[in-house]
Image (tube, one colour):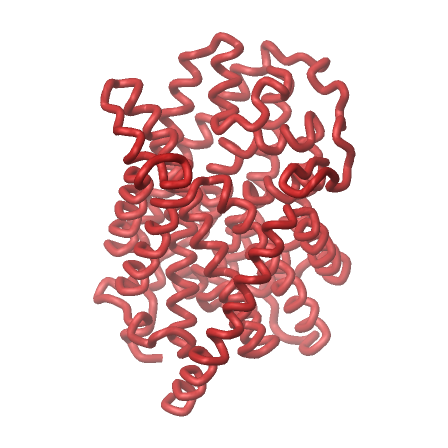
Length: 455
C-alpha cells in the first residue's frame, strides 16, 4: 500500500475502550431516557436490556471479524471481503447515513445543553441562531461550531484526539455516578407500577408507536458506538488483542451503566414527569430538589458530549476513507497528511454533517440513524457466520462464543428492532438505499473497476 494511503498505528486498548465508551455513553442516555419512558413507561428498563443484549450479540461478531481483518472500514470492509462489492456498497451507503446522522444528532443535542448553559450565565444566543428552520430558527450555530472544533482536533492527530477523549469520558462517567448517588436516597419502588402500561410489541398509529419494542428501537441509538472502534483497526498497535478488548469491554461497561441510570431515574421520579423531556436526567434532579446536581450534570454534558461526536466523526471519516481507497468514492479523498491523518476526507465529512446539524432537529434524525446501524449489524453477524462455514480453520484471535446462537440472535434481533421502528423511518431508509443503488450503478461500480485495473 502506498505510504500516502497508510494510517499511523498509535492506539492501544485503553484508547479503544475509552473511544467505545465515549461513543456509547452520551446523547442517548442523557436525552432518550425520556423518549423511551414515553413509549414504554417503567418497562423502559427492559427496553434498555433488550437493546443492550442485541448490541452485545453484534459486538461479539464485530470483535471476531475485526481481529480476523484488522483494516479500517468496519462493516463495510467485512461485507466487501465476505459478500463482494455490491453488498459492501449497500452497507457502506447505510453507514454513511448512520454516522452522518449520529454526528449531526449529537451536535444538535450538545447545542441544546450549551445554549442552556450560556443562557444561565447571561450569554444566550438569539433563537434564530440555535435552531434550524423546522423549529422556527435560521441555523443551529453551536452545532456547526462543535463539529468544526472536533474536525480540527481529528486533523491535528488521532492519538492526541484519543487521549483527550479518554479524559472527557471520565468526566462524563463521574456525572452519571453523581446522578445515581443523588437519586438513590429518594428511590420509590412504587414508581415502577404499572411496569408495562403500553404492552410489549410495537402498537399504536403511525407516528405514535408505543410499547417496549418501540422504545427499544429508538433507544437503540443509545447503545451503538462500539463499531467506531472497529474502524480504528489500522491504527491499533496490537489489533488482534486490543480490538476485542475495546469492543467487548466498552459494551459490558455501558450496559451496566445504562441499567443503573434508568433504574435510578424511574425510582426517583414517576416516568410521566420526565417522558419526552429533552433533558430528562437534569429535570429529575431539579424535581427532587437537587438543582446544584442538575447544573453539574448540564456542565459536564457540555464538556463531555463532544466525545460522542469525536468517536462517530472519526468512524465516518474512516468509512469514507476506505471507500475512496477502493475507488467507490473519489480517490483523492483517500490521501493522508504527513501526520498520518486523512485531512481531505475529514473536511468533506465535516461539511456534510454540519449542514445536517445546522438545519434539522434531533427528533428527525435519531430513528433514521438506527435503521442504517441495524443494517450494518445484520451484515456483520451474517459475515461472521459465513466465515465460520467458509473458513472454519482460519486464524481467529478472538472467537465469538456459541457463534451460531449469538450470530442468529443478532440477525433476528436487529430485524425485529427494524420492524419496530416508525413506519416513516423504514420508508425513508428504503428510499435512501434505492438512491444508493442508482449511485452505485452510475458512478461507484465503474470507478471501482477502473481503480482495480490501475492497481
